[in-house]
Length: 377
Image (tube, rainbow, N blue to C red; front, side, top):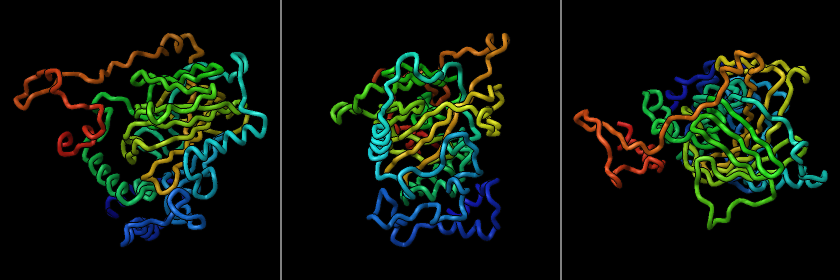
């Protein structure tokens, strides 16, 4: 296990000696009793030991799993709710709601008072650990975030990814899931109304619906597990707070850990202006032109029973620069052509054929695309 981690030694971040790095990897070995230090979500009060203290030689000042320090205008990398976070997403959401209520909120926007999030946006990969193919995270730091069984599964998955084996719903023409939704490429569009925010991504034609009309999540009788889950939220001035639950089992991103269908996520969205704030940020837009004064930053806190403590990070979107005539001609969202449930396959004899009705495995079931014995030969 240690050798697997050393292969992915982080680049950037604070300086560290080889010896210190190896020692930090050895610290990740599971204790004899298979236990980790207790966190706020798993142990009695007073026994919380933050991951940053358990593994001071991993990651950066901002995160135990980050490769480098990140710059933001507004978003904070400090874990909400104290050194080990809130006990649950519900407690986190209620604390934010109660804070807004103490100040006279939540804000009831009208069609004209809502923030202006118009235009086309893209995933900004220079901020936070939820980035394309996990490029801002380290294997050993992510392993430290996981309880023993989940850690071993993640390290096994990491070996398969290095061997170009696909443990990924996208490989089966399925949606990327949430919160991996943040890392998708392609254009994004946001449509805000007083009672609902529609947050769209060109990839797989996905739209998240965030209800801000005061409704709760569906009851347990009606709650199912969906690719994007069920999202409710409220406005606190120009900040949109979201609580999402009812998500499918999946992966955070290739080269990143799995998540269970018990994951719940708290987000806080805010549009910022780096130029006016005099904050120098060079977005990683994978080559797209961007407007320097237009940026959306989102604080994301993920709660999953496989995590030692809640995982808090920041993600960002850049605004596509479509101000020129040439850009207006080129920037058009397209229909994503990947078709879930295609019936075609290749037989052992190399013949293209089709499954008969009822014969095809249920590829929307994570047990199918996680089944190493069946799929990943």
